[in-house]
Length: 85
Image (cartoon, rainbow, N blue to C red; front, side, top):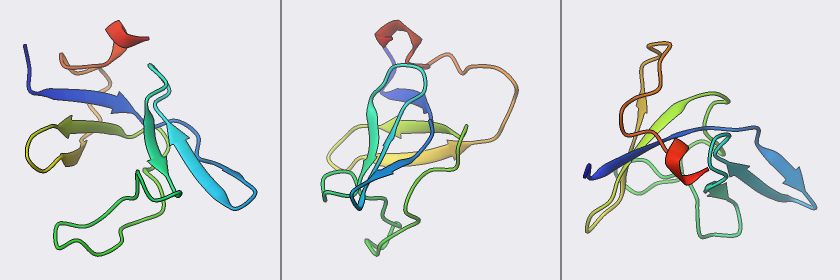
């Protein structure tokens, strides 16, 4: 079992000032401006408001969760989230 999981960034949606972005494959919440899922840079400062639409975002869980935007290869990576859809 891999310690990473890759999501496909779906369309960011803003409703009543709240920005939410989910995975286009499995529906996992990737961004939520309510404070629980805010993008941050490595130094902890605020990052962009959402992932680029269609970006493959690899998540590595651990004591501190890390996110990496993978280069576009035209294929789903082996650690994709399709089984959770």
